[in-house]
Amino acid sequence: MTSLIRSYGDRSLRSLVDLDRGLVSREIYVNEDIYKMELEQVFTRAWLFIGHESQVPNPGDFVVSRMGEEEVILVRDRKSHLHVFLNTCRHRGMKVCRYDDGNTLVFTCPFHGWSYDTDGRLVGVPYYDAAYKGDMDKSEWGLPEVAQMSNYYGSIWATWDRSAPSFEDYLGPYADTVRRAFQSSDGEDNGVELFNPVYKWRIPCNWKFPGFSFDGDRAHAAMTHRSINVAAIGPQGDANGGSRAPIRAPFPYSDYEMTTPELGHGGHNAIYEQPGVAPYKDTWFTEPGVDDYFRETRERKREKYKDSYIVGETALIWPNVNIQPHRILLWHPHAPGVTESWRAYPIDRAAPQFVKDAQRRYMMRYGGPCGLTESDDMENWNYASAASVGTVAKRYPYNFIMGAGHAWTDDHAAPGMTLNYEVAEENQRSRLRRWLEFMEAGSWDDIYPVNPVSTARADATKAKSEA
Amino acid sequence: MTDGEAKYTEAVVGSPITAAPNDAVMITDLPEGTQVRLRNGNIVEITANPRDGGWIFVKIVENANDPNTVGDEDMAFCVDVIDVVKRA
Image 1 (cartoon, rainbow over the protein chains, first blue to last red):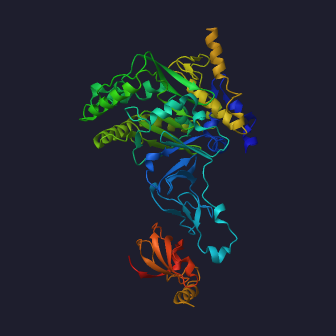
Image 2: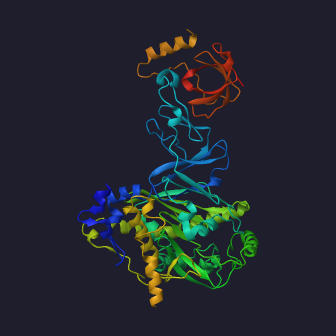
Image 3: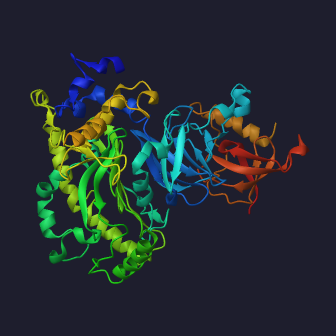
């Protein structure tokens, strides 16, 4: 498979992704062989978001998640240890768990009855003594468990690859972004819980359409979201307060596209001109008491971070999860032209219920399958996918030229990052570059820590010095 | 041969498409503390019930063949539970 794709027709993968010229073949978004190769080269290697420990607070609690196309079970065993298992019986492959979440003593396969403890051990085999006659060692037939799992400030991540770097190394300069995403609004680590259940729905486009454009495609907003920006999408509840900007209550700042080309992460991030956290600005005009809560927690956060410069508030954590304040966006590959989209919404664990309810209602109105902004996005991704599969259409590459060659680095204000103008396609090029590296790599040794292919930061530094 | 074994034989003969006996007790809703008889003659007490209809966690109460196992913990499969001898 790999050798076939590396020479797809008379073209190599590298010829399909020409980042020097900003040209990317539509083939990588629609080709089934390339998609299958992604499942192996990307989704069995990369660190992937699984869930949050708040989803499984008690022994026996479980929630079903995904890694690539495959279902996994996040479960807390009887000793309160967390595990991530592939959801498949070792006997004939049946799913051992067919619920989205719950609490159990064991996962019993409904096919022949093999039963697994919450720590993954095979503990029950029907007719074991009489039929197997001691020929099978149950200890060798437990549920397949991920090679590495990380509980990062309450968020659970995993990879199938033992040779992958540690999760914190994998994040690089975006480690703080992930850490802050799971802080409560007063700045306390691991201070949130996720709304249950997680939103899940399928959209007819390749996973890279949303995954590689979210937090990397600011140019779309003015056109795509024009109607909803006019109609008021902020939590204020009236047209006059429709802008989303007030909830961000920014200090003086400059916005950039930022990315770590060596790692593929990146987002739309601000560099603030002063340390600390901006004062709270009332915004929940139709939800009594909510502003009071967030005003109070903001003051505590301001005190905690009064001397800190905060960089990197949103990001795609490569390959398929966007970390943003108040929401986690997951883009699971489901088929070459189908993405299973998941939304998880963190909310302060200690918040009063009416605050949690207000935020849940707002996030449902803002995003998700029936949210107003993402309906706009989905329409574009879906029709772009449909218009890219044709024989003639595939002759015309996508244009990723915006801002190419104009990036720079600033190791004082944003160490480890490459910056570009706030409306650019730097992040998308970074993700595509990392995608190419994963697709061509034989192992993690080829893609971490030194990246022989990624020349973006070197180019950017050179461009800055020449300027 | 116990009564349970006799029933098992009849069930297999009468149901050629399945090896599962039909004399077994439905275990799904049996609460902890219930004592049941297993096909091997042992009497066990349910210590936990996953309510999956397949398995129960048990503690051995009586084992005529090996009294030393009394108190041991084990799992019992649904088709091996043939009678309720004491309700919780």
